[in-house]
Image (cartoon, rainbow, N blue to C red; front, side, top):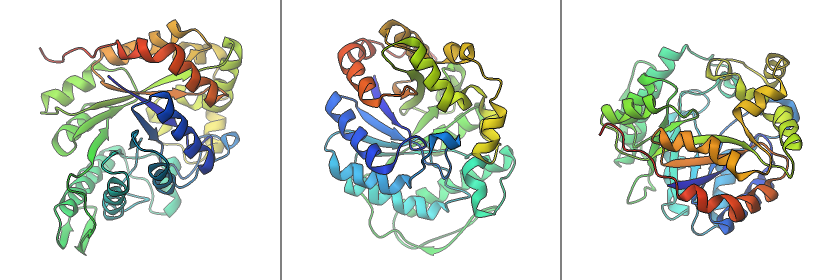
Length: 325
């Protein structure tokens, strides 16, 4: 089991994210994962710095902890050639500690460049082409590519690591899990779904399986619930909503009916380690071996201390179940 700490780039500024990453390394987390957004989910979250700059600063301030994007969309706001170059550079400056998490994106972040936001079937085709382009550029030399949606003209990434970064592909369904097996090195998910892991393994996937577990730490349960409701209620809307709304104002409107009971049902809220283990365990039982702890509580330092003192040993004792045996 590998345990990660989620850096919420929608909720904190760049200096604070770097500080939290340093603290996470000191507390014994195996890796930090950071979202790659242009907008926050809600205006009251208040932040959205450029993820790749933050990652470079974290690489310079840390020595051991792994770095992961969770996740980058390499098709609309970014061209895959830019992500190929960025990931290769980050792998070098972090001495091989970087893994590239990719997905088909959310309208919230991708529509800003004025190219529209395609239907999901088109987004998955674009993601396939993007991964082919990234792999092509990581082979070295000048490369061109003529796809249905994406093109590359006589491009070369000059600074390449000896070993390319692991690519973990986000999947909310079986088709994306197949893409993760065929063109990625790992799987990324936000739900404890064994069917995604099984589909990934059946398609030939044998790499790391990342998942995000929704937690909210505070000294008392009610404070944790209120914090999660205030800043993270968008998380209970489901992927079909999360991928399609264009701006924080839309998420605010779409979540007016979310209740404290909804938050309690999805998040582990408060200081009881047994409840946090209860939420994490289904991800491990589903076959995920890299679990990211996503704290929606109001005190990141308190949560990191709670992890080190009361959660770390219990979490590491969990063991992913073998799939397909």
